[in-house]
Every structure is written in C-alpha cells, then in structure tokens.
Amino acid sequence: MNIAQLLVRSAQVFPERPALFHGKHQVYNYRGFAERAASIAGFLRAHHEFAPGDRVALFMSNTPEYLEILYGIWFAGLVAVPVNAKLHPSEMAFIIENSGAQLLFVSGDLADMSKSTAARIGSLNAVVIAGSEEYAQYLHAAPLSVPVERDPEDLAWLFYTSGTTGRPKGVMQSHRNLLAMTLCYPVDVDAVEPRDAIIYAAPLSHGAGLYNFVHVMLAARHVVPESGGFDPEELVALARYHRHVSLFCAPTMVNRLVDHVAVSGADVSGFKTIVYGGGPMYVEDVRRALTVMGDRFVQIYGQGESPMTITSLSRFHLSDYANPNYLQRLASVGVAHSCVRVRVADSDGNALPAGEVGEVLVKGETVMQGYWQNPEATASTLRDGWLATGDLGCLDQNGFLTLRDRSKDVIISGGSNIYPREVEEILLMHPSVQDVAVVGNRHPDWGEEVIAFIVARVGTTVEAVELDSLCIDHIARFKRPKSYRFVPELPKNNYGKVLKTELRKQLAEEGR
Image (tube, rainbow, N blue to C red; front, side, top):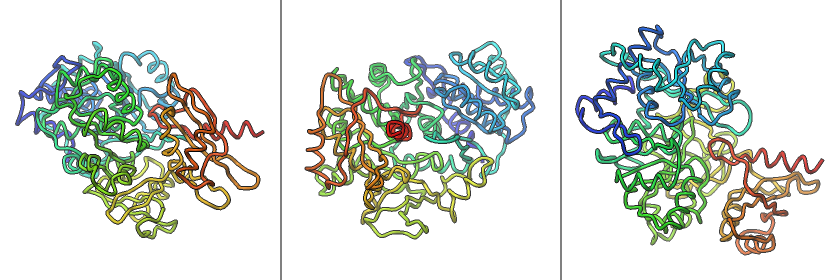
C-alpha cells in the first residue's frame, strides 16, 4: 500500500480532469500531476540513491510545486517531513536534524534563510529550491513506472507537533493511517464531487495539506492562492471564480473571513464547505458565522497524533436550530469519526459516565504509530492502544463531546476546578470583546485565581465592571475573573494557538 496510488488511480481514470490551479490559472491536469510526481520520484531514486523509508523535508510556503513534491516523495517510497514555513530557522533546523532528513525542498522566499541554516545540519546532503533550474532536472528525469511498494504500516508522513512548550515531537503516520483518515472525510465531514475545488489558504504542511488526499482520490481540483496564504478578499474572489469551493481554516481565519464578508457584503455563493478546527471556536463566533455566511460550516477535532479524525460536528447539526439541545451541541466538537472510538476517562483510564469530565482518549485506524525516536513520550501517550489526548471533556448521552480545556490549563481555585473555556465563552458574549484568554495565577490563599486577558474590537472600549456583570449573570461567582488585563493582542504560535504559557509567565514575572 502506497498513498501515492491514489494519484495514479485518478490519473488513469480521469487524466484530463483539471488538477492544480495557481489562483485562477490551471497548472496541469491529473495526467500531468502524476507524470511530474513520477519524474520527481525517478530523480530521487536515481540521482540521490534514496532507499525506501529515507526522509525528505519540505520547508515551503504554499506554492504550486508543493503537492507534486509530496507525491514524488511518496511515489519513491520515501517519508515526507513537512515543516511549517513560519518557523524560526533554529526550529526548522531541529526538525530536520531530528528527522534525519537528507534532502530539503524550499520555496524561493525561504531559500536564503534555509541555505544558511542547512550548512549547520549534519544529515542534509542537498537543498533544492522549488521552481529553480536545478528543480527542473527533477521534472525532466526518467519517471518511475509505478509507486514503490510499501507495507501499510510503513511510515509515510512525519509530522512535528506544534506544541506550546518544549521541543516538538515527530508524529509517525503510516500509509494505513493516512488512508483511513482520507476515507473518513466523505463519510463524516463532507461529500466530494469532481466539480469541487479545495483552496489551500492554511499551510499545506499541516491540516489543510492532509485534506489533499480525499480530493486527489476523487479527482477534484486543488487551488493554491497566488498570495500563498490567507487573504479574505482573494479568497472570496477565488470562490466566486472556481465555485463549489471547500477549505480548512483555523478559527481565527474563520473570524477574519466572516468579518470581511459582513463589512463588504461579498457574494459567498461560491463557498461550498468551510471546515474549521485546530483551536476553540466559541459559540458566539459560530453563531455569527452561520448568520453571515449560512450553513456552510463543519467542525472537526483532531490532533497530529490522530489527524483531523477524532470528532466532527456536521453541517446538519450546526444548522439543526430547532433541536432543544442546539446550543449545547454548538459548544461541542461533535461525535466520533466512523473510524475511531472516543471515550472520556479518569486518571486510571476507566471510562466515565455521561456528563463527567475526564481526559479524552481515542483509539482507531488513524491513531499514530508513536513519536519518532522518543519511546518515553510514546509510552506515556499511547496506553493499551488508546491515545491520551491531554484534552479534558465530557460526553453526553448522544455521544457529543464537549471539550473543557487542555489538562494543563485547568485552574484549581479553593479546591474547585475552573475550566477557562467556560469563562471565555461568557466573556465573548460581550459585543466589544474580540479575543480572550483566561489563565490561572498563583494565589496565597486559594491556590490559583482567574485572570482574563481581553482584546477589544477595533474602535470600541469595554470596562471590567461590564465583564464582571456578564459573568455574574451566567456563571458561578467563584469562576469569574478576579482581574481583567486589556491588551492589544494575545501571544500566539505559528498555528494561531494562544500561548497561555506566555501569559502565565508574564503574570509570574509581575508577581516577583
């Protein structure tokens, strides 16, 4: 089993179907896509003499070359190591060295930085700039006739976790893992038709890139924006041009797109589906998105360790307004994907009854093999086949999972657990609150106290007394923040996740 066989099959059955677009310009059809991947694979095997299982890294912005390089790597029986293009050179160097990658593909905008950094990485033998004259040699090489045969359990994708503390860990995803994830998409997320187009507005190195497989499998279209990233105005224009457009967005991206549509009155009929995940999407933000853009949304919950495939909240459930449990379901992350089992457990791994909060565990065909060269982390995360996510949540009687928080973010004040997300949801009900993060701060008497960092919407102001009143009206008094810090923005990592560790560090420094 080689995941590249998905491309070979589509190219054989539908060779003339459009495959890749750069903005509005068609780059190649499925025959051309497969031919380019096969030639890249031929060069990798003949010139570099790579053996199956060797690692090849990509440190690239979203470019038209990205997908053909990925499939060339798999076609050759190698392992892809995608690296987020926004990382610092030292972070990139750690991933390359830890993975043992021997070759690095880079996009032109990152070439200078990559080459200077690569000189210090012992495992690397070459750095190739996508689109360069040197790269053209890969496309003109003698192609492999078929993908190199791989065992279903062989490593295919080595993804390094974003993390908010410590060094990233390499998540090992096999060909079987990736195929199981792919087959779940049309069952649990969204049906894909040949006329559909997926736009890569989020990094191809992460969640957005993982959705390439189902669109390759069903010979749909792939669109790389000319900007290489997320620009709401460009995105609306591409949706209007291509029609039947789908994309994966982080919650912050959804909010920016909704803001743009609300202000501009843009036509959104070209959008088919917007899948969101990767961080908390608050109820008020979801309701606003549905009001502004209609029933075009699906939520997924996953981790690199079980990519995109723990639970999903379907388009149906997001638009089931008459359901008496609608608001509760809107606050949830949906129900288990069809290929996994999900349970909430106590500290000993015992399943908890509905309504009780514990750690979210997941088991199934998409769960990783383990962490690359890190048996200790693997053993602490994979327990009897179950992946311990580190997230806290509860299941209701109908199987809907509601996340409370990361286990490390729970605030314990006076012996009571306070889940920051619950407080954040209330604070976001205030019309002037744009963004919020709630953390715990040491307190001599109570252990911890609740602190809220608030970002106000542009052109508005908000007073602490208003927020306090809002909390008193909706949650227990002991849960409300003891202090409000008004800031211009929240610290976030390259994936848009709030760095609560930085906020706690800031509070600790203030207390010295």
